[in-house]
Length: 506
Image 1: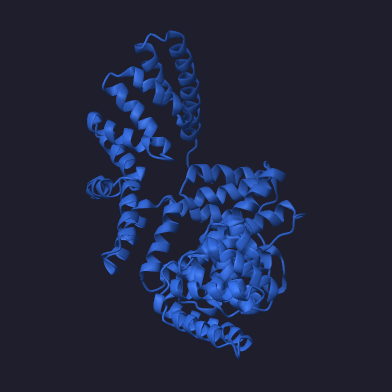
Image 2 (image 1 turned 30 degrees about the vertical axis):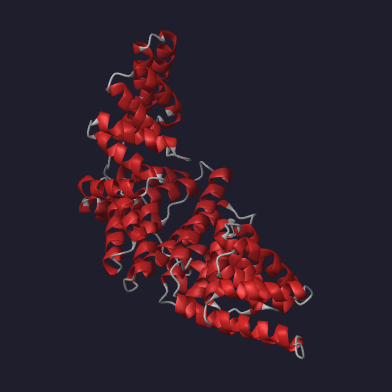
């Protein structure tokens, strides 16, 4: 969503957008000198971006003429533009109902709902606004955001695609397409997983995922399992050749290339198969899929949506650098857990706008997530001092200190993080471990027990067992130790299974 729209350009458009309504209201008030004067004053205030003044003036008129929808619309617009979105809803709803063809009434109603976080209610007025004015970029951008929020990803992708066709230089539609297509790909994968989890299609889809993340032994195993369950595919051998090449085994890659060449290749110039459409990059032909889609259709839909997401991602990356382009790119990289590159993008945005505190905070958090401790720590210390009400800074700084075994310095930071509303659960785990390290097991028990749900490898339950033992709670200690041993056994089994996989010859 465009969060940094120019106030000057926005004000110019809004003045023009409201002229029709102002004139309509004034026409209905001809011969009534005092209301006409107030209407003129209100219109002048709107043009000069004195929105609170305009709201007060339109409020007077709306009270005097409650049945005049143009005044309700003007009042709602002025309230929205002066930041009074809750108050704007009622007059804008009234205006939109009375004037179904009024773009400003529907647009500002949707914008007010959006800013209040009521995105489900924003969808319909924004849909109507886009129908009335398809060329308005901000209306379509708000609609894309609202549709994403309510899970209407296919319609959201369509909104972002049309916005990109209007302005390909804007980073927002590219980022919106990445998010929407990623969600649609996940939905297709989930549908296939539910319908046919052991099929060759599911195994092949998992194999491509492993290949993309360079988990070569796992990818090799999955490709072979998929090939064992269905007819040989030329594309499977080509994928295995690519796998061997990335793993540095060019000799084995040549074997798979030869196997691929030995299989007949479909003539895509005379075929309309889904596989041909995918090879030719005709992804829009493959998607969307119906609720009754077959396993093969879901497989190709998942791959097509993933490819469309990658296309949008690379399109965003190729755009000229700007604050918006870099921050959106950083957000997408962070979702992919590529925190170090995301931090670099945030730093580049900050170089363009050095005094932007929000950008500096984004960079600080990304540096922390990237574990670039020397760079992150001074920023975390700075924001902990300036943003006392935000528990994230104390939690992150406390985590770094605990990892450096400076437990006594970490404890007050972690305590302050937990005292704030909605603290991160990881702070409780760090605090429990810190109290155990400084030999305060009574306090450690409380926090380690509350953080037990975060345990994935048994380490939390092991420390909890230690804390119970030191406080004389032997039964609880045995129970925690039993849970630790179970989690450890599972982790060891998974590790052995992964180690058993290796890249073997074709």
